[in-house]
Length: 125
Image (cartoon, rainbow, N blue to C red; front, side):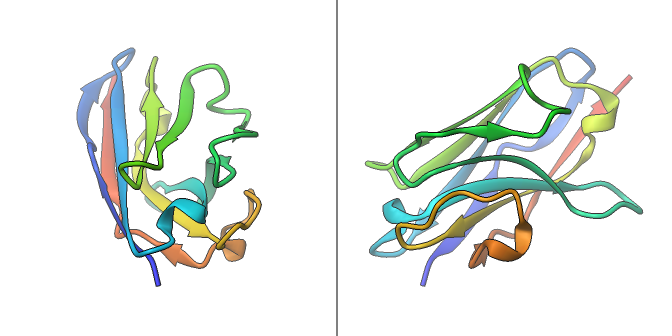
């Protein structure tokens, strides 16, 4: 069992930056692939970024490529999503998810086994 807790969301102006954190608890948390997803009001949940359990093979949605970066510190059982050059259309609740153990990353939300509660990101014009 893995528990995930996101933090780092908030209100930022367009062009600004935020770093989201995803703290994982559980004996084998570092062996899980990680994904970030988001859901804006009235919209479907969408994939943002993912990486393997080792942090290799990062993959990004086209809408965030070049602006967002996924990383993790397995010694701290924490994953991160660095978000730069934020746009109003990035406004959403952001969720981290874990898949595994030793799972490969995926762009499909249904492939993930555990989810955090979400953190709100609001980007003002």
